Length: 169
Image (tube, rainbow, N blue to C red; front, side, top):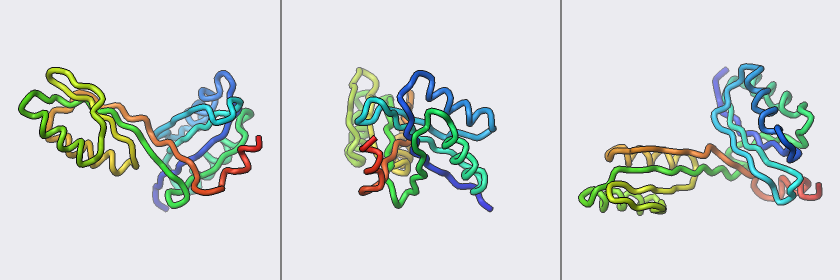
């Protein structure tokens, strides 16, 4: 058995403390959360939580089952990479004086990153995409002095009509 990552899409009732209850389950059971993101759906009564966790197959199945048992949880789906669109957002503040600025901008252009802040000695770059693209972007920026990085963690949605039934709720 080998370790693998699992992306869970969890539809929950939009109620106070629901994110705490979901994350507390992981903590109580000793499961690791690689990333977690949450946001209200098109129906304000529901929130979608995207959780990335890793472990052995049996452990990941237990996580899915335990999350599904929580009171506020309406639906839980595992989103395999080939059946979902997965994205992450990164903000990177890079030291960029007048000499280095064109080189940093060239890296941003290659990845189609947005420059969202320009200061005298730094730039803040924004990039959205799959985790591997963000990793490659950060790797190239390591040639400069990275001042700070903030990543959102993965958010995901199943492709096609897989979640159409949820819209009726």
